[in-house]
Image (cartoon, rainbow, N blue to C red; front, side, top):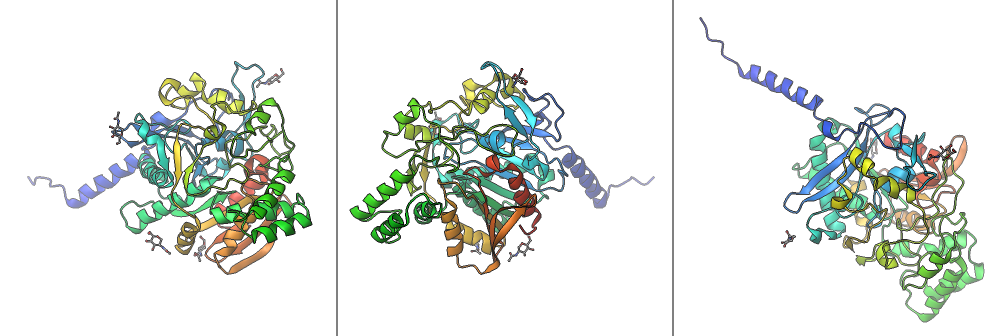
Length: 497
Ligand SMILES: *[C@@H]1O[C@H](CO)[C@@H](O)[C@H](O)[C@H]1NC(C)=O
Ligand SMILES: *[C@@H]1O[C@H](CO)[C@@H](O)[C@H](O)[C@H]1NC(C)=O
Ligand SMILES: *[C@@H]1O[C@H](CO)[C@@H](O)[C@H](O)[C@H]1NC(C)=O
Ligand SMILES: *[C@@H]1O[C@H](CO)[C@@H](O)[C@H](O)[C@H]1NC(C)=O
């Protein structure tokens, strides 16, 4: 009898089959969300959530919430979403901007909000990962609090480790196109993380091979461009007079971000006075005044004296009254060095006005935390929209060099701006994209959504696109959900705007 000898081919077939079986069942079933408190319907796609450990010895863990695409999860792009701050949770995007649900506030304060499906969820066309970053923010934490002293560079490295480990947990998504997106201070997170991903690809060590590009909304980019954006914005929007614009331009010689003379300083103070009653996140929205908000205007760095009131949007539910935390106080552009978080600026844990309640009550409910596999409040801490727990250093410099490297490397970039945001005004983003000296391949023109002009766009060579969203504030999908889903879908699909 001939002893059956297994050939190498046999082994490779077994290996192949085994690998196939492993891959097919490798999504972590413990991360699957089976029910969501507040939501009584059927989920249109699978949701997963949990922690990825970044540093075992420190117990440093980052929390993610992953929504599978409602289209074709195996083919549609995987997109990472990051909110900014620094210190703000990406549940901001999940709850208030483009997440799968619209949250209806409870009638009684002890009750949970009611969740309705969001017809403009970005999960209609993509798999999307909401990541709380860095550790200390949202539901992410570390057992060693030295990790809460951090900055741009560390945050990008940690988020890169997160991605590598996340794709190990979900390997079937490695072949989908991959994009990184975010808004406001994530204007720093997105390009710095993208750069780490590309370095990993270039060196062949840490491949996320299907990385295609990135999106940044009303993003912090460069202290000079961001700092110079406000005055021309205020003039163009009719918030300051021609005379004052002329005076301030002459006095500051085009340098508004770093006033060099007292004359310039005093003219800028006049600009501030003219616009101080406006809502910084959307100049079209009314202000919300109360005794608390008056108190906080006394602190050193000028804070917006205004807060959002209910706005007109396509959303069936109102937008927030208060938006502290997602952005930057007036005339305080992000500079190198320590960037105070909002609670640190306010010198208190409680933020004035009483909104953001739906997110806070939902994410601190024991039932919700259990359902989404978050550690208990006693371990991970109370969820706050924006935390003062971390100390954050802006140490990556201007983002323009990153955008150059990425776009020249063949990665696609969409830089979009709600054109009524006065916090990171579109004038700054328009100016820095133009300053890169790329040839214009699609001249400034309106783009449309639902048969209406939805904003303007300018396309550059190297797949760099600048886009405005007409009438949107700082958090574009919160104000213009339909238009946001439109441009998002077109960008991911590589279609013209
Ligand atoms: C609040 O009460 C109204 C009227 O009874 C009801 O229609 C609505 O669903 C309630 N909202 C929530 C979140 O329970
Ligand atoms: C926290 O981390 C720092 C830096 O790695 C280390 O020096 C310190 O011993 C750690 N503390 C604890 C309690 O493990
Ligand atoms: C971008 O940076 C990476 C990593 O440093 C480098 O390998 C690559 O050559 C750069 N690409 C361009 C187009 O500058
Ligand atoms: C722009 O993107 C398209 C679609 O992804 C790609 O085919 C093309 O090569 C890119 N162009 C450049 C200049 O990178």
